[in-house]
Image 1 (cartoon, rainbow, N blue to C red):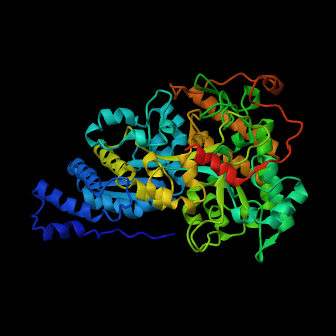
Image 2: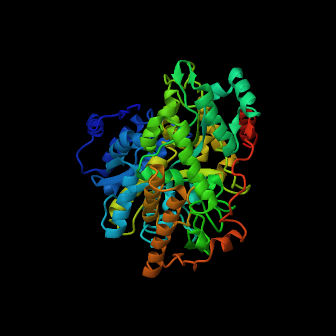
Image 3: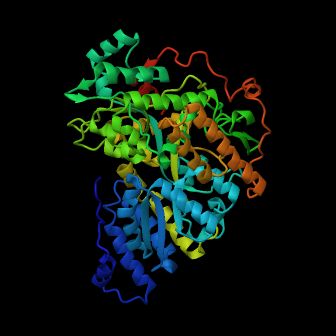
Length: 581
């Protein structure tokens, strides 16, 4: 991982002040002069930008003035560990501290630990951090419990004096995901990445491999549009090709360790990609990608006996394929890996494709000198839409979008919350957002993704820029508002999935257990009455056959779960993205 150093040392502000002949702490105007000098020296670090240097300085001056009464205050925030947040913690937090005088500590921890800290703070009412970057997946939780401030209210009320006139919310690309059923915005996007299909474009273009694949399977080697083709390609590279350039190759990559990240592997739309839920955007209605049936915003059940789809045929099929592919076509060590451990593996050069690959790993995947990057810096790989399972229907979401977003609690100290809100606006501001995009490749602003500098870099990013410029990106959505208690329900997924991965129970038994446990949590929430807005109102149980006879999800079993494989040439696919821009 590239290590960043602050453009200036911590003592720079004092040194500049001394050089300018600025006196002690008595003059606010003198302190501003010193801080503006510091800000100007940071401009080289904050390039490229969609702003001119003068416009950057204008916005930095606003941050300095807005932070005046909080100078010297210590503020702590937290996020998960991905390259974007590493850049924030190592460069932007020190820069903000030096420029504004607010001392920000930006902690980096695992996503599971972020969720645990959030849950602890919600239960205790005691502040652990002054601000959190957590997934917009929690929007349903935050809205129902009422412990998180609606930022749309805050920006017009208590926080109006520390809300930047340059924020430009219309420029953000993920606001729908952080908006609750009441129409209020509860979080502010900080970074965004999707799960897409990843493959070795150079291998797929080889005429000898194309001919061999077509001879065996009867259709062209290309980007798979259904799971049948994905499975054929996985088998082809693992069993029929086996070795390229003197190295063993594998047709699939995944992870299977019993760990919170194993749950995200499934809640991040795996069931939806198989086709378990209903049509409708941003999430299936009335049954979403978690298999939860919702009526008038109230969750009513997960189990098929309540009209849910967690343990329906499509969901069991999805888990079965996940296990089969992991066992048959992935490296042996993959089953013992977590999300963060498995993410960099395709960059090592032995993986042919990955059906479910987070674009958060684009930066290390595109690093020069890796086995999957050409000498000229262009990638040997490409990204494309993930294929669909046989239960999928036109009109369903295509994939998952992770939108890490700033979140603030009602019970937080008001002044520390204001200071943290200033930092959140700084790291998402146009002053730094394009440079941050180049570092982490997790876009949040339309102006950044459409910038000339991203056009120039696009050939080295394997389709990322084309994807985010295309309106098709709207088909990739987050978890949505249907999940009433994300921390409690998410922990049920990885423990139950792990039991199936290890062979302790069958996929059907694992999903039955998950559905029943998830419904018990929602039943307790209903009895407790702790969610007066859109809380669970559980359905009475009926036979599974009753629900299979109803339109939509849960869907009855298909007679054929492996239809003919279908592929499309990558160049035709990406041409469609470009044509729609």
